[in-house]
Length: 223
Ligand code: ATP
Image 1 (cartoon, helix red, strand yellow):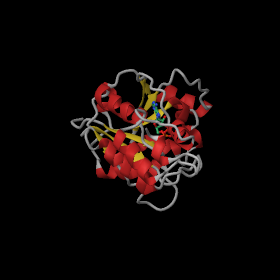
Image 2: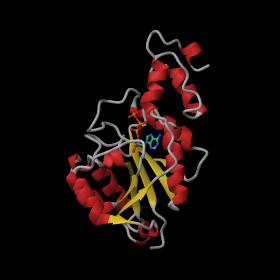
Image 3: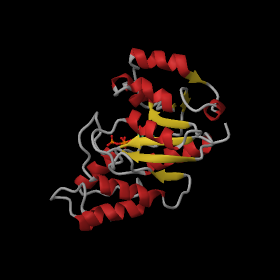
Image 4: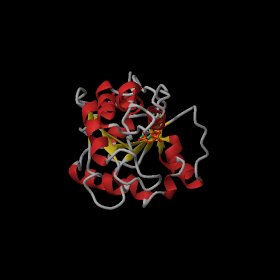
């Protein structure tokens, strides 16, 4: 295989933060990926609707990755009608990149419930999975997820370069205790999330007044 793998990091990105961005950089560097795409979902099938609009979430990712060529925004799920099924996203990427290994990046906590996803087994027809081990989060895998891991696990990341799809590689990046829900909570309480996310993204959130309740005053919250 001549092409380096492309990483795919899906999420709500409500908003994008340094935990997402650093994870994507770790993947691009440690696994020698061509680039990593951040793919915001329009209507997450497994959780409530995001607070920020699709346009805002995409704009913040665009701003955040603009200085780093190894990270990109891929907004195809926002342009598609209906629920954001990962299997459809990966199939459309596979059509565009027939000779490039694709690596879907997901936390072990997310993988634990993979068998509940729409046509989950077909994901392996388009992509590998890079499983992000989070030693801080204890997770019991669904029996079908455990069986899939046992059948598809590889111990050497070079295997991700040598085939297009179908394998699972586990990677443990240095942990960063940052989450979008914590950022939303700080803003709702009128407190500052500065340094948890890029300054340009925070500035835009403050300008637009997203995530703030009536009590949290935009003029003071980010200072
Ligand atoms: P929320 O707090 O709203 O649940 P989040 O911060 O977990 O959001 P998502 O958009 O749900 O963000 O995450 C997208 C992907 O990024 C998921 O696979 C998630 O496991 C991963 N991720 C998010 N934050 C981190 C982090 N600090 N370190 C490593 N991976 C992360």
